[in-house]
Amino acid sequence: MIALRPKVPDLLAALIGSIAAMVMVGWTFDIRVFKTVIPGLVCMNPMTAVAFLGFAAAIGLRRCRGGLLRHLPPALSLGGAFLGVSKLADLFSGSHFDFDQLLFRDQLGLIAGMPPNRMAPNTALNFFLLGAALFLSRDRDAHRKVYALVIPSFLLAFLAMMGYIFGVKPLYGLLHYIPMALHAAACFLFTCVAIIYTYPDRGMAGLIASDGPGGLLARRLLPAMVIFPTVLGWLKIQGQKHGLYDAEMGLALLMLSIMTGLIGLVAWTGATLNRLERSRRRVIDALNVAKESAEEASKAKSRFLATMSHELRTPLNSIIGFTQILLKNKGGRSNAADLNFLGRVAENGKHLLGLINDILDLSKVEAGKLEAFLAPCRLDDLVRKVLSQLEGQVGGKPILLRHVLPPGPAIFRTDEEKFKQILINLVGNAIKFTEKGEVTVALEMGATGKEPMRLTVSDTGIGIPADRLEGIFEAFQQADNGLNRSFEGTGLGLTISRALCQLLGYGLEVRSTRGKGSTFTITLGRQPSGAAALRPGNPSSRPQPKGLPANPVSPR
Image (cartoon, rainbow, N blue to C red; front, top):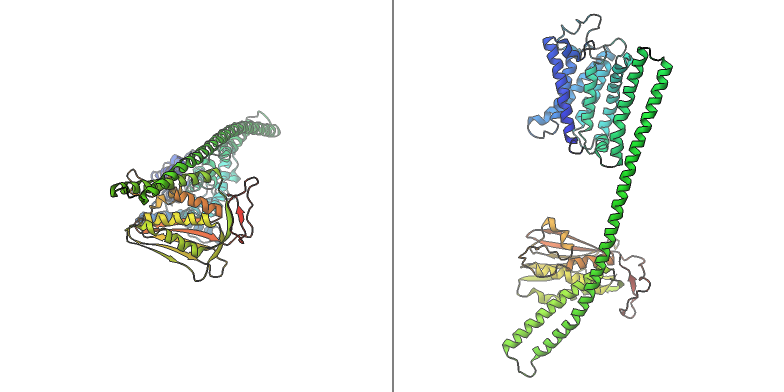
């Protein structure tokens, strides 16, 4: 159904064009059956056939966006609308444009007992409505206006079609005017449906093709509501004509048949919806079970990581400590080569300890055991301390570490330890991925104090591809994430930084240009008036500075 939607207008345009072309062949070679389709009915006016050919071309060429062809659909649409307006002007103002008499004038009044073949008023009105709808359908946001024009046109054509089926002339003919032709009514209906399907994901077309309960109901009820009463009504009329029952009995049988059919249709659709609902519930239950299993597995993994990280960190600290003692070489028993090896042991031990600390922090994030205590903090001093601490990571690279801070103290209530960890991660990343240039930390204060404070960390490094801007915040991911990547690290720094920002109520965003650098922005906001308390039974054991009120915050 979804794959068929874009093809519906093209198929209907081909059908409309074929009917109109057959009528034009009938007028050209005076073949009456081609003009009427069904012998004994009204011929389609040749200008009506021309207008339908224009509508078919406008629908078929609607996707053309280049060259001269792009101007053809709107011109053909307006041509059909103009034909309808001119005929209505003839009827109501007494003017004599006679556009419907331009072709085959000598044949239009030759049918005995019939008035000259002039375009019917309901036909003219439909051309005006559908020509305007086709013109507006080029705008993807004009579907409501298009529907407002298509619906009355559909009703007029449908009434004419019902008039032919039930033999009720007032439904398809007005006063002394020649009636709307049967195949003209059919072409109008096809045009209405084709225009509706130019918006395949909106309105009635989107509803019919949807996979939800609404789409199911529409696909079953709409055809049934049209076909079922029509067939029963025709059978009623035929039964009365053949004397099988009188009008009262026929009406009673018609109502009984319609009610029986609708009850059966409702029962069938209701049973189908119940099956779908049961299937949906089974899927939801299975997803909930899988979700609970995944959450339990994640918690078990986090507990394992926390335990193992702690067990690994204790002996590793001892290794680093004893290595530092040996590096002092107080007894002078170690030569330069031995000291070099010991230095490498110490350096790798510190690197491994950093990785273990990152994994431990990640396990705390996933286990929901991170807690924050807010207290006044001088952010300008914190920025200076972090940059001073990370100067050693620059090494021999031509990188300038600088800060842009507002004059005077920048005091903000935050968890200093966790905010420092965020800043160290961001600045450390910037240094690692920058070969030359500068790394800048800037603190922006709102002009009036009502705007949120922002802290940005910018670099002139390798940058991040646009398709990886969100992926870098996932665990164990880096912008340089290939098999032979150039930069060391677990890829946990940004994951932990975002988790800490969420804990503190801050936003963390990134923008980057490949080859020109990246900028990470922490939106601090204004200090909230109240913060949540610690979870019961889980008080923090971290000592607080004297004289500074602490404000505990639970993980969000």
